Length: 84
Image (cartoon, rainbow, N blue to C red; front, side, top):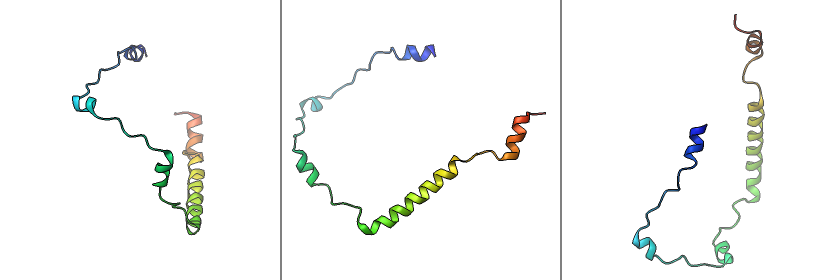
């Protein structure tokens, strides 16, 4: 643990910036409305709703299966009694 604390005290590394990067112009600032107008229309149409609901149900079922015990009851009982 002490090593990780010492490593945290290391000085921040110096970055080399090329002359072309230093001479580059700043990006132009544009109004947010212009950016938003370039976003395509909604990708979720009424006909995609059943697909999304089915996918959500599959994911919820998978999550429920993953919450179960990894070790079966017989093995768990053997583990609790210890190795002989």
